[in-house]
Image (cartoon, rainbow, N blue to C red; front, side):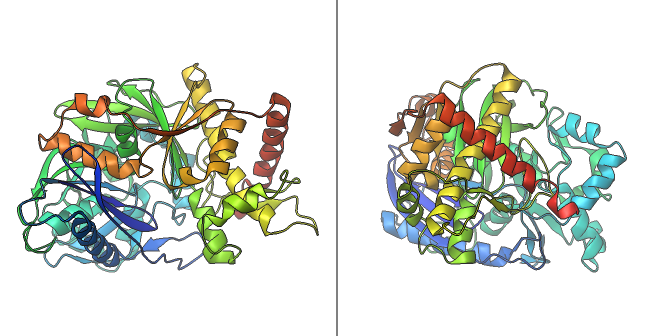
Length: 495
């Protein structure tokens, strides 16, 4: 059996797959979100490990996996989130700074004004934005008492969530190329941490960063009962950031194939082949995965808040009890009655890259109800995806023929139909919604010799298909009004 650990922004999912890559066991738990100041988002790394360990054991128990049954482990994770810990004790030295965190926006402005963005763009394929890890590490080094001295003495390790989990499971300080490519410190062509970028972002000690390995291969073996009785010595054989894992899990192994994952945020990725693409305006170039000495690249559009907006309706406003309530509420209306919600709760990502944008609801009247909020939230998920796809089409010069979709929100039939309508192309929904976890399992299976790349490419996995039904005039009107709403949200926090 293969254990896939999918450590996400709001919870951890663990799935167990059998020898035929069929789902055999599952576990899931959410964990606490911390918002110490407006625009700041933190996680307790110790709690993430505790939850991950518990959920992994639940999934193994659900699958009936006893000693000797577990063949390998794959990890996929929320990207860009930074952990820091003491390698001697394994204890965190500060809360993790989450990818959604905006506290370093002014620092990014400063570097951009100093003309440093071309260097970042050329070396990493990314943009100067607080979304990525580099300025988070710089902030920790400058604001946590004694941390720089610890790091210089080898008593502090930095890493994205995958590196934290690998350390807790195996004791090794390692990451994979896909996660390294999201730090804004990694040269995606040269294939190593970049000394000029380490110096630019506050002289980050190279030794405090993890060893970078290909996405497929052994990262270490489980130690000291980290997964309970009988699983010591099981290898971690596959790692990729959540969006790259979803691209792999969707079987997008050839250039030109792409997908959108609907999770806390939404991410459109397009396989760009073995040559690092020049990142066009509004988009990112990133490492998709590495296998031996071969690197596959992707173009990416990153949307920060989609599923998180539904969670906000539930937990922040209390207007729904369950995320699934939004489907019936949206369907109860014949139209949106001019109500739009721009969920820029942590700024806007692709193609706008505006860390100062903030959540905005427009078009409210006395007749607006919670159904309008629910519908506006679902529409915003789809309309943000339209913005991202249009930017990708413009960059590639090729119109989208089909969008492969995965993630938790794909169970919402109303949303998937609306997405097909406003994009004007079919939506092919993956058979397993948790394609990120499936991708991690497939990476680990290939890495451990259980499966081959051909096995991954030949998998069939379409659960549902949605054809567009909306007329061009209605589609155009919705998108035009959406764009007006986005302009109201832009730059709000700048004043």
